[in-house]
Length: 423
Image 1 (spheres, rainbow, N blue to C red):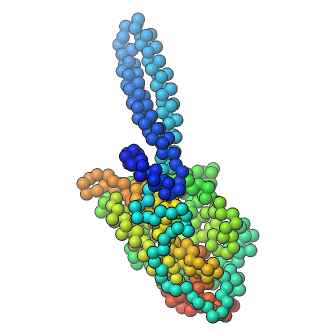
Image 2 (image 1 turned 90 degrees about the vertical axis):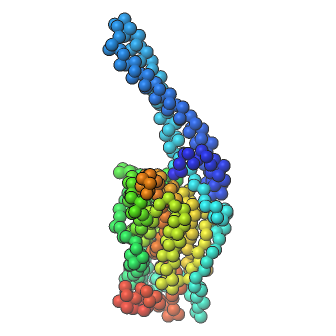
Image 3 (image 1 turned 180 degrees about the horizontal axis):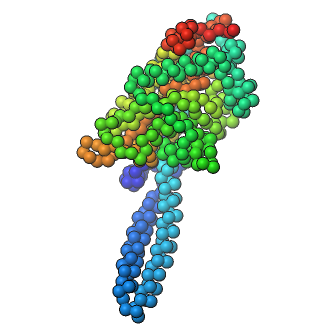
């Protein structure tokens, strides 16, 4: 959410920002409501004060005057109730529109329509050249007995899977390695709820615009998170932190759930786009300092790169263009890892900076050195997500005999083994 004062003073910048993000938003209606609400509020307060003043005089007035005063108070009450109802309706619409305002992207973000216009800024590693016909992760996983999609579908429907034996152990190895790496880099692990209030989803910007992607528990006004970012960022909602406590660096290993609404027929084969997965998310809550946020962004991105480098996986980093940014993101970098079966780099990580957007919704503040309450900045990045990362891990490290090379970083978590072979 943006500050209404900022919106009033930067109208044209907001129009350009929404157009660049290709997000439709009725800014004129928001400003119209804003202009109407303020005088309406004054009218209601003025009538309330007048009514209260008259009410106090009734008991002290002469009997002959009382009925006239009561009638006047009644008329004021009726007028006030009419205006209050109008004010309530306008405020409700205003509040809803405020939740839809897109935050303009940072000035250096490339302007583009969609992910095809994201800009590559870096590559690491070299895609492997096989001297045999390589297999996709599903063929490899089924032959090794570590991936079972048919039984996953039997249990939970489409886009479901089961990792078995060494498949489950490999997933755990990747997650545990990442978990340990982030602890060494100063991140505090939290074990967090994945079933959260709708307030947490709204506060982090996943509602109302992304509501169709969430699994809802309507009876209890709860939702399953699609990322631990929701719980981690909301952890200090409604609080005023001392500036000395910033930055807050936290991470969580959690299950995540996404309906994948609107993706019918897209990425239906294999483990790329599934409904339930495990992810380690990293979040930083910092001061309202754009230079500091830029440094934290680089730190989060660097952590994710360190994981992929340890896994010996070739990847590239792209600067996400305006048309591929979400409503609240100031800027975002995606990491795309090489997937031989797709013949392309495909997204495995996203690193986002939000500035005040989430924190303002969450009333997440800090007291600066001058004693002033300020809105925090928030950032997040995927450290690792599985099973998607298993696609490049299996495919890039396959051998001619169908076995899988285990990167050295994972071997301590797999009894020192250097490969996965069919049993």
